Length: 110
Image (cartoon, rainbow, N blue to C red; front, side, top):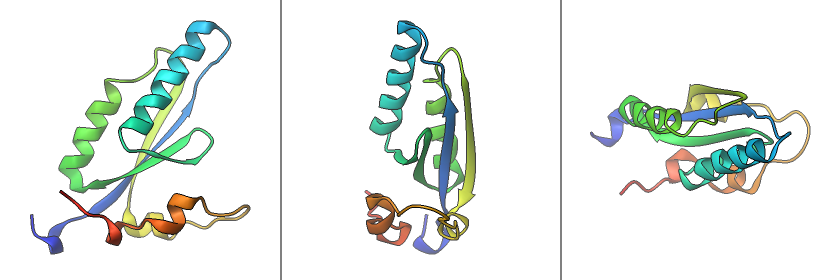
C-alpha cells in the first residue's frame, strides 16, 4: 500500500466494568492489561485509543478486541479518522504526554 493511500484511523474503546467481586476485579485488570499490551494508550479513565493503518488493520484489531472481552460490563468502540481525532477539543485539563509527542505523521510502520 502506498503512502498516499494509507488511511490512518483511531480505534477508541470505552468501557465500564464492574469491580465488586474478586472475579470482576481480575477481569478488569486482564482487559486493561490486554489493551495496554496491544498498543492502546489511555486517553482518560476507561477510554483507550490506538492508531490503525486502514480498514483491514482496523478489522484485525476489532477481532482481537472481541476475543479479549470481559464477561460482564459494557465495552464500546468507535472508529474515527485521524483528522477527526486531531480536531477533538480538550475542554478541561491538560493533554496527556502521548498526545503531545506522538501524531500519526510521526509513526514509523515496520
